[in-house]
Image (cartoon, rainbow over all chains, first blue to last red):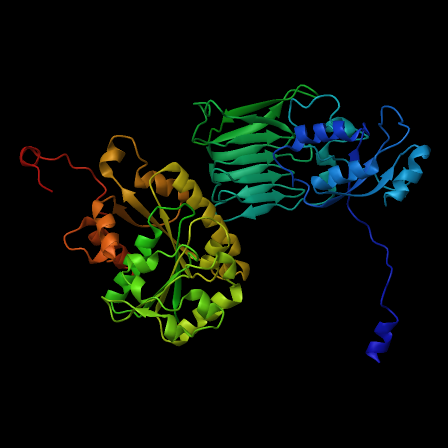
Length: 266
Length: 271
């Protein structure tokens, strides 16, 4: 009997909502997009880890005659972005998008997200799509969005080893045993490291400029907050090397700078 | 219950096989029934270090593939009655190792009443190395006092944390021990080498011993005798200490401070 009732339900449709990110695309020339993405994510081809994305063309600078969808899609997939549909696309381009297997979504079909993924280097040139804060429609800062839901904090108890990577999605990351050179931590919120901070630490990965990085033993290969990053080719500044330190963004809007200061905890 | 111990490092040439040979011998000398398996399929070396290369008939891959049984493949050590060697295959490559096959070999060894099973890992972080550490209960991470070796050891510790069965099944993590080898107190003093304290600080796992750099090791491997058997050798003494610490006995660290040779020694030479 049970089997019979299951037979009737080999497929079932239920409403569900899915969190997706929006990729604001301002250029349809695949080679230029490739350059911009490379500039943005060069060292991290798997940064997006298969996240679904809606391609938003509202900010397209000019409407081209045709779009090479195959090239754009394969480019995005190379960075493990999973495009599922388009919106705000000019009507003349609808056919092509449909043929490429993309869903045509209405402008109101989605509630606009507050954050846009953009691990964007400070030096990213103008054509780079989706810069950090300005893409937020109502200029609503990230904490406002986070306030509704308690952001989960990811706690890592063991030392993070060379080659290991941890991503605290949507929240803070706490490292209780430090991290080794060659490891990488990414958090949408802040990073708190009790012990040596030695690898690459990227806080505010979705553009939260209020994120910070704290460490009791500072000595990373790279730090980044909301895409503004810094390496330490000439060594860690004396005042913070091997000591307690915090990294935060100062300045406003388009003139962010990273500030690294010693922590006064004695 | 047999304890499976992997001897691993990431980097090559740091002394994994020397360490596997000496530690397995040391445990056997303490009365434990011990097996040592060479996972370096395609580049077998352990049999040479143990001096049993002429007695290899069947190997690990034969056993994994069911072409021979364990009793046929295990070679009894020439020095210790309760030490057995399972050599690697010289003619195959590491793809011949399967997880099921390795698990079965380890289970069978346990049924034969072995107390300790040492897995001598190949260098690298590929299949052979991963197979060697997959079933480990404890890991001896061998590192030279040098940055690239330390970095590779760190990498292998990460793999241990993510790919070992204990990690995957969420059981108590693999017990990690740091063994610093090829240590030269003089070069540390001169600032040419990391000190064992630096290495430990970088890797942050408990130190089980420091083995001094010595010509004795080369001599021992040429003779096909594990270094721990050498008479009047610092290396042998250091490995004895490692065994003692492994068995929870307290031993102070030796051979880690540099003593300037005295005037007589300088005049008349001598060891």
